[in-house]
Length: 373
Length: 248
Image 1 (tube, each protein chain N blue to C red):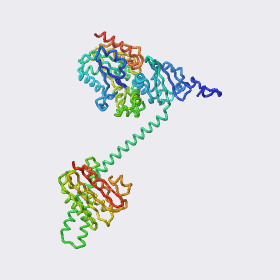
Image 2 (image 1 turned 90 degrees about the horizontal axis):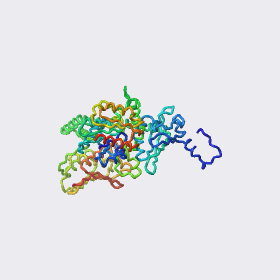
Image 3 (image 1 turned 180 degrees about the vertical axis):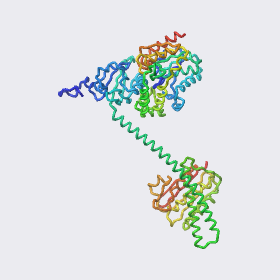
Image 4 (image 1 turned 30 degrees about the horizontal axis):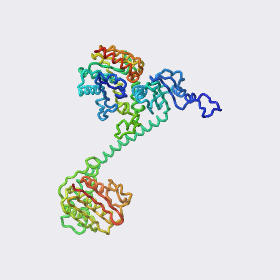
């Protein structure tokens, strides 16, 4: 600052005249019409002039055109109506070196009869802050445009998956019928075994394609639709278990059914849900203990529960258990795509039901339950 | 009497004027859609892309309330919106009181509007880049957060609330408007209240309007600035009363 302070002065004897003029912020006092009466040296210096030059100028004349219009249409009315405004970003029009961003606070003083007398304005330099804000704004724009690009990519990817899945079905269908026709002919023991491999593997592939297409459909917005009829769970569950035993012939699946009534559900979807949960239990459960398939149906609820023994599900896996592409054991080749549990939970949702998981050292069980209204 | 606020504010800006008329007139006040306490969800970027959208609202309010012989008082851009409403529905209005009006803010050949085109572009740009105090920080309050705010916060933003996006659009609609051609069509008795030293609508604008509106009265007020209804309510009220007395 330009004026020198005597070295003997104590901080308590601070000269308020000096405090006003040589401050770290700009001070401006105007009359009630916002004509400048006093402006401190700091503000005048920012405006490339001396305090006297600004006397009786209208306050808004100091501001660049945006701020000028904003002041006259918004800030000035605000001062008159609520007596103050804070932290408004405007620009000083002419600093001799382009515009200068400032923060502006304003206060109006009234007489005790409510007559406005003068206004006080405090100006803070905000050049760095403006730069920071602009950087933030640009970062936000970049992030938004990247996000929207990613979203488009995701949609394209999922459409691709849907189309791919659909197109794979036809040649696979041909393989499956060919295998079935072969199975009906007289075959040598060795050939019969090979045909069996063809059949179970192509069936498994078919299921994976179904899961992939369900995922794509869910992601593309249409979700899983169900077509409910009255279904005998007993038959359905045994059929599913028989199918899985083809792929895991050495394993034992035990039943514990308490089925009193038929249930209203989508037969194909519940078969898919059960098959996914059973396959999950057969894959992850201990190989020397049976898998237990339980079912209950009565007037108030129905449920299907699949339990296995073996290592419990690690705690860190729980949160993502039902997320697509989640795989419990990275090293196991039997995992498939990690879509089984996701699809099962989507089917459960479509039936207004829920799948709950219990897992400890003794037992791991998945229970799908639907409350009947 | 119907009072319409201008750009950047809301109906609160009539608070020092309206009491002087309440005893003798049925007073109707409103916030333009997008301003003050209006329902922001009713804002349409298509409808309010032109001042006609706002004029149609005024006709709709008058029709809905079955108003007749309306004395329309419009501030700033709403003065012009009033002229347009009177052209749409001539039978509703009795007279027009135009406070700090301007039919066109941008200078043209033989016309002083107060701003060069590049200055208006700068204004719109500064709104675009969110330079001004229509900051995002004001957003939550403006967007009508349903929870009650503590009193302090309620007070500090209770006047002239402005949603930044809408303010930007309203500014564009307002400051790019040129409605000079409708002035000669206005046959209703009109009072032009022109302030001295108004950076938004300089004296030349008031004089231009007066010359081009056949049935107009021009009063150049001592009041300075753009909001005489706030800076000089007594002078404004007296000028309106004198005009209305003369019209009876």
